[in-house]
Figure 1 (cartoon, rainbow, N blue to C red):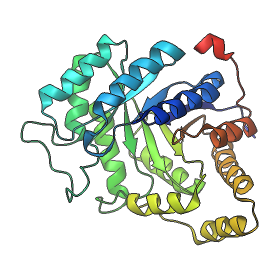
Figure 2 (tube, rainbow, N blue to C red; figure 1 turned 90 degrees about the vertical axis):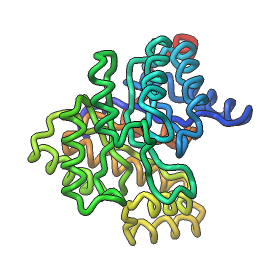
Figure 3 (cartoon, helix red, strand yellow; figure 1 turned 45 degrees about the horizontal axis):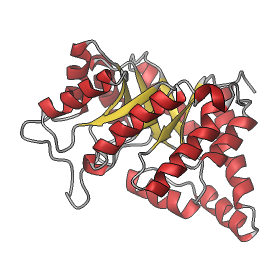
Figure 4 (cartoon, rainbow, N blue to C red; figure 1 turned 30 degrees about the horizontal axis):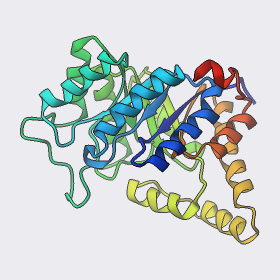
Length: 289
């Protein structure tokens, strides 16, 4: 296998006291791995906007990690969105993951606020114009549910990079070749910014399968069979570790140097996969807390 990868982690903001304990426990396990950065999501429709802001500030101040805050176009004016961005700067956070965002449940599709950004490209342009931010964006190795085909995913990513984004993080995928084909297509389109694969360690196959269906991510028949067999044989945890590790190892063999893990605020599987890839604690918790 190639050199040890650089890693980053995504968390979601807690909505309850129990959720807060889970997030801090997750950070306690993963922060010692010295990630390049961690990101904190928004809920659909911007429903966790205030919680995201609080989590971003707390993670940065208490764990000493570089934090990238998600920022979306949903249900906010341009002025409100840029005000949120400025509040991150005031808190010492200048890394943004700029996204169009998912509409609120039941909305039936994205509708721009009458005084808001029409899409992620407009948001990126506005953030880049300030000169204050390092901007990452989303990318889709499988066709986005609203895209006509895979080529449109590449075209849209190029627009975001040209607008001022400096790197992209992909939606999760189940087969390494899906990402590798996308990477080649991006290079052919003149995209030279880093495109980081998003990895989803699968603790709950049924839940991951439902999520994949909603996101338009194809589910390989063999993987469905293998997870079902592992569950029947009482080997779900072991198979999940092997599946994610094998996926990552294949990417590293093809020259990938960075991996972004969607942790779902559950650290153990991500930690075990990282360990298998040679990413082990480099700092004591007391150094990051």
